Image (cartoon, rainbow, N blue to C red; front, side):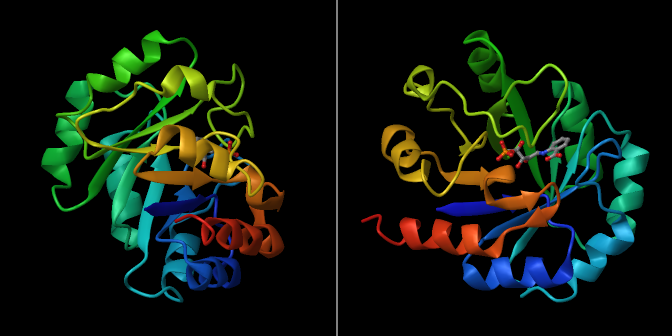
Amino acid sequence: MRIKICGITKPDQGKAIAELGATTLGFICVRSSPRFITPEDIQAVIEVLPKTVERIGVFANASAEEIGQTLSLSELTGIQLHGNETLEYCDRLRELFPDLELIKAIRVKTPEALNLAETYVNHVDTLLLDAYHPEQLGGTGHTLDWNSLQQFRPACQWLLAGGLRPDNIIEALKLLKPDGIDLSSGVEQSPGDKDLTKVTQLFEVLSTLT
Ligand SMILES: O=C(O)c1ccccc1NCC(=O)[C@H](O)[C@H](O)COP(=O)(O)O
């Protein structure tokens, strides 16, 4: 299972989280976020990571030029789109950056959002379901209504996000069986500052899964 820890801003924390078992690290490239990190600082984190760790840049309604600029300065392996990006825009990014994983995040406000998510399956590699918040694009700490997701089986891999923590992750996994999980504020001391004790707890509880 993929375990993505998002909102990394510090090389020492990125390295420690990778060593604890994260398969994937996420870097917030959205300027309005308290977890924003520059492309140069992303690269400083990447330089201390094992090459096997996946490295995702998180964007929201960014232009292809802005994404390209970030990619030219940091060795990312994927792009996560967290805004209102269209199917056509996903196709364009695939053409421009064919070697990168493309993840489309859908913020689930109503059950119809799951139908919207399904429309992306042939346009991206991976879907990510996150909580909806009227003022925050991500990192909200709010959980989704897991019961309403039980029939969600898209024809591509999907990651569950939104308010996941060491003390609720097992329940979520047993109920939904996603291909991977994405955590941010649930393993933080403050936005952008990860709590290695909470990350350690996360991997301890995950190791109890059979
Ligand atoms: O985390 C942010 O600050 C953020 C800002 C703008 C767009 C996306 C953002 N985060 C995206 C993520 O992938 C988070 O990991 C996801 O929203 C889950 O966050 P949390 O509920 O805190 O676990």
